[in-house]
Length: 125
Image 1: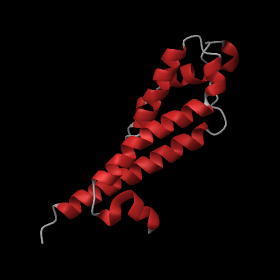
Image 2: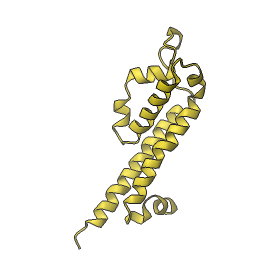
Image 3: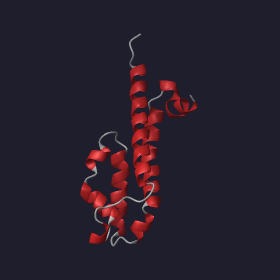
C-alpha cells in the first residue's frame, strides 16, 4: 500500500506517476552509465556512447516499445564500442539485463497508474 500511495496517491493523482516516469529516465540513464562504465572507457567516441545510453533509457521508459526500438546495431555499439570481432556476439555486462527488466516493469506500473488516475478522474458518477 505504501508503494501504491507513493507512486500514485491511491489512483487519485496522474501527475505523480507521470513525474516518477519522467524522473526514472534520468535515474536509469545514470544507472546504465554506471553499469557500462568499463565499456565506455574503451569507446573511441564517448559523446556518441552517452547519447546511445540516453536513447536506451528513454526507449525503455515507454512500455512495450523500448525493447522493439533498440536494434542489434545499438546493442552491438554499446557492448562492443571498438567494433572488434572478439566480442561478437555482444554479451551484456552483469546487471545490465536486470536494469532493463526493472525499468520496463517500473514504466509499465507508472503508465498503469496514469491510466487508472485518468479513469478515476473522468469516471461518470
